[in-house]
Length: 284
Length: 164
Image (cartoon, rainbow over all chains, first blue to last red; front, top):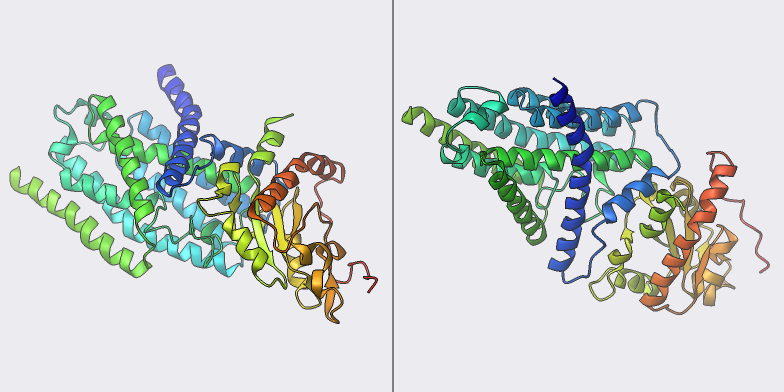
């Protein structure tokens, strides 16, 4: 029990540091890919602390509650991951985190914020089924929803779930809000939607959203490494490799429309995951 | 110097507003974002959203129509914030100073922190101006604490009556 608490505390402290450095490396590599020098690797931390020191402007009283909900549900799902808890529950808690942000963006009257929130709903509509199918696939392989049982399984999950892994990589781009699926916040464009979902969040609230993004990043990379456990270090290396792949995709692709995303994700993502699961049934 | 103050200098997010500029200064401002000058190495990002911005970069002289828009943008920015006037028109009104509809430079309307002269200024000068504005942030943050957390909201009509 004490052990669990210590592991959880280490994860809560270490995750934002790792996530922040990863997004710093993200910006540096993106800059190099565009033939620029790029910001320092610690730039996300500078942004974070600067935002904390800005004036507190809230549009309404409930906005901060939703931002905190967004953060705490993300932390909760990370803690569930490091403690090896129920994977199905983890996905649901993660969905709550996303919904909190959508509620926060919907609670203000700015049309940009609302359009961003609606696009975020479309994104959730696209990736949630794939995440659930991933959990189903893992259940069929290990006969348990617990993450601990993945580590006890003799062979890495990738041998029985290659297509599910592919589908998960696909939705990772949506979840990380990378191009071609960055239309809910327009991460690089800044123009047609202002900042979409986060338009009405400023100062400390935006800092907390950024912090949550770092937690999400670590959590998702952790989920990738599950496919290659154990040994866990192989999983971590593959996760970093996938992150680099996401950067390349982010830099070489243009933004698509939500209709295209929904069609493509349901067709490719659900298609690949379902094929894999049917294959598991036939094999058994 | 606390970590927040240190971070303030290293992460200026810029919102760029074109008053009645001829677009010469705007092109030079956007040239700062290109790989040749790459302002992101100073942490400068061009955000399109006043609620995320620290520095308001204004090009062109202010006239009676756009003063409302300019003030609206300025008022939406959270403290501490800085204003950089880029180009001769934004600094003084430039060649449009005597026009019947022009109020003059940006300093007739907003408290300008840094003037970047030139017609049009070189991208190096603009980058230097924004970095200078960030150096002033520490002082501004102190002022912000002294005057509690309330920003002073400017309204159209508050502007000084120009001598012209």
